[in-house]
Every structure is written in C-alpha cells, then in structure tokens.
Length: 271
Image (cartoon, rainbow, N blue to C red; front, side, top):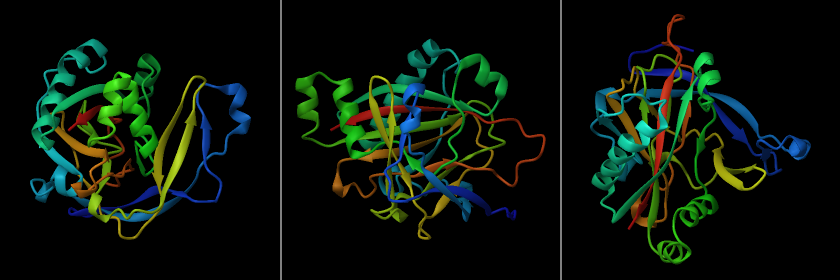
C-alpha cells in the first residue's frame, strides 16, 4: 500500500460469484452446517480523499453527502439517549435532504474494533466487505415491519427510500468508511447474502469487483461530522438507488491509533 495526501491505495474485500447463493445462519448453531459462506477476494483500489471537494457530493446525485453536524447525544452507548435525541436529528436531516412526506427512524448500530467495548456492550465490529444493506426484498419487508398492513400496501405502491446516517463517536483514526460514488455502480455484480435467524430471514447485497467503482473517504472524521447515504430507493429517476460502502485499513493510520467507534442510524423515507 502507498500513501498520498490526495488518496490511498488499499485493499477492499469484494464478494466472488461462485454460482452458489451464499447462506449464513445467525444465532442458530444447530443449522450452521447448512451454511454456504460467501467467498471474497481482495482488490487494491484507489480511495480518494473527499475532503477537498466535500461540498460537491450530494445525496441526490452521488448517493451520499458529507455533513458538518453536531449531535445532542451525550452517550452513544445509552440506547435511550440515542433514541430520544439522535433519532429526531436524523429524521430532520433526511426530510431536509430528500423532501419526503414522512421519515421513520427505526434502528441504529454501533460498531467498534475496541475489544473492551465489544465485550461490555455487545456491539458489532466494522464490516470489511463491500456491501449495500438492503435488497428489493428486504427493503419491502422493512416497510411491512414498520407499518400497519393497510399503510404498508399503500406505501409499497409509491416511492420509498431507506437512508443511513453514519457518524464517528470518537475521531476516526482506524478503519474509516469508504463509500462508492453511486453513479459508478453498474446494475450487475450484486450478490444476495441470505442471513437466516431462528425466527426470520434477512437479505443484504454484497458486491463484486468492478474497475469502474470510484471510491471516496473522509480522513480523520470527527464526532461533529457525518455521512448520509442511500441504501435503497424505488424511484428509477432518482439517479442513485444503492451506495456501496465498506470499512478498510487506512495505510495512514499510525500504530498507536485508537480503534474506531462509530454509529449508523437507519431511516425509512415515505413519499
């Protein structure tokens, strides 16, 4: 890997289509023998520093946007604090950015590679694989999960989108988020990963390598900064439907760098 002020060259993990649909069993040890784990390959790619042009990237055009935004949350590891303060903040931001009729903020995930925090709070590690969090099937199911049957059927006949806000809890020194310009993601190379739980089945897209992908990151993001990006949109005219993203090993990170701590909040936008 080489270091440059304007970009880094670093490996990203892409899924490989081996002809067998990947199936994973989660919290279901007695069924794990049936799993077919996804196969990945590492590709060295250029990840451009987005800070010099941070104001250029727009949710409507690129699928993501960089924000200067301070949260009122005092403790991101307190779910009540996050739901009381951060959810309202995200609802307001999404409405401002995509002019929808209603926003329903429905969950959040904290990610860290700090082993002590992982053990104490039971949170998740950063995902080091190129992915998009929703498929056609899982996005529609999310609508059904959040709305009454009558409202869901009406919503599914209209435009809806799922949007995520990603922000640091502490300044990011390791494993930053790389995000792909949505205009450079062709409508191929999406591999459905089925995640089977004892009482439900979920789907996500992992994505195969394509040399057309244009990757961006924002080094040393602080708690007063955030990224908002789309992970699903039913509007064919919206330009960008998905936004691939992944954590990666930043070659600029010093050996003494602190483990990443971040939070992502998800919202359903109804039009």
